[in-house]
Image (cartoon, rainbow, N blue to C red; front, top):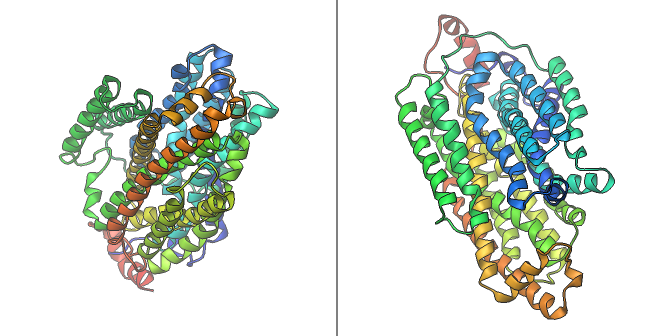
Length: 520
């Protein structure tokens, strides 16, 4: 029998003002959370100077946030069912805002890392909760459009983070990287309290404590091992293998546990929906390839072309512009035509743009590079959020919270793997070219800029390093092309409204009306 949320059932195909207001609040929270993953990256040298710490130590300001963000995601689905999405979203905003204020007042690198964990716990709940709230508000017939709205902060994070971080460090101090979240967080809490619909009480499932003790630490340990690969420059390192193996063992134990429990932390029975299973595979391959490649674009402009951080961020803007142009159109048409056609077209566009970067050199035309980024942005807008829409469109109203949690875990894990893989490939490609290794090593010396290097080091070094980037982009292109295989299985027609397996007495009374609504 067809199920739809009461508020969404009455709505037309267009996003009404109520849904747009809810979307606005969700986007504010998602932007704060995602920006804080990237905005701190630009401040790592500042932290080294301010706290007299080594790079390996200050890098934990990013790693601690990411691990806390990943570890809390599995609990979000159950907590949303137990406490209500509105209450939990407001609590997450408050925790994130308090964590931001604490980070701004950090007195040592250790305290900053600790406060970043608090920030990550709050931030990790914002994205899956936002997806759940918007999916419930809009209903399955408009899920493509709401996913397009939520795709905006996922693009602004990698592009806007370095720009915002560089600007704040130039005009103020590192404290404002975190202080800027405080007024925005307060406004978001007030708006969420006013705009979001009141939580409706429902019987809560028992909390899967064993599942939490297996999955959250397992996911964090695995991602820590993966994140250590670029630093160790090899997978065959105890620092990589030990946490990664422990993490995989814990996650394997969780799978065994979840398949035998009635109400597990993450319901793996969701994979009975073929559409969600295909979407998970497509998202995994896409996130590994695309998010890994997104790390390479700014590195190329910084290291090969010698651009400043702010200039690099601006050079990446065409990618965001392209995505913002295609994402609303793809979201609207996905609801009518299905995600399959758009995902396939988007992957082809990304592959075309990536193909240009496989031929990159030290003096490739900026017009060609920026045009390629724009084309990839168009493809990005037609790919990631339609994949999300395909996954969630197959779920019942009750399954949405667990489904968004699952998809966020997949995206976070795959993105981390992609970043590590591309970093290692680029590092090895650089070291295999003596001129590139010498040039890259010289740039890592304190206070040394590209202009200060002699031509005998700079010119061959730039050419060799550009060639190393081109080699790495070939790997990204191959992974993008591989996405076409599962994408062919995505639906190429409008979404099918999810069905409940069990029907209550009240549902029997309402069944004819709801069925006619869905058929209409």
